[in-house]
Length: 162
Ligand code: DQA
Image 1 (tube, rainbow, N blue to C red):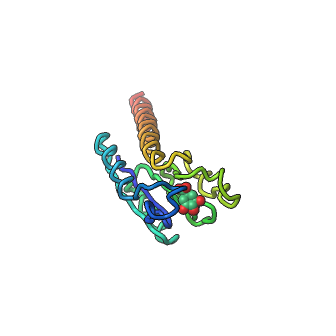
Image 2 (cartoon, helix red, strand yellow):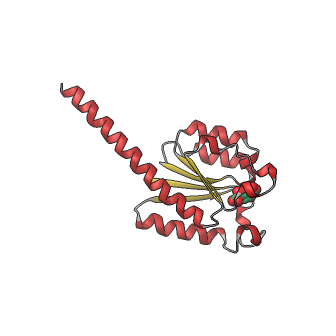
Image 3 (tube, rainbow, N blue to C red):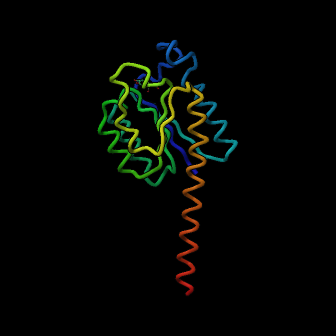
């Protein structure tokens, strides 16, 4: 099982930018925690951060045939990017959206997520712990997908044998 973690613009500035909102933790430390959870659960994990919308679209497309799940914080693009939403919708890979802050408590322009409707779920307002919750949620989603695939294969086999 492989999960790709995609981080949008300015998240490379965690630990420096608006610590009162995003906290003191750096992105690399969040990723180290996710990696250790992934290792414990025998999940391959890859991290990608970009400040460019097109690069994020490319990385989502590259997940086809490569990743079983996507954890994404599209950052400011959450509120503006039809291109990222379309890419998430196109690849048909379960995705979870994470926000460190509670976007609904903030400026009105942050209240709407264009990407959440094409994600399996959204975790917000939990700070860096939200990424851990997303990992736990993704394991659950992938286990359910696997169980469904196995049931479908068993049913196909039964039909072939009948
Ligand atoms: C964010 C919320 C966005 O509104 C903002 O533009 C970010 C970070 C969050 O994680 O809380 O850059 O996605």
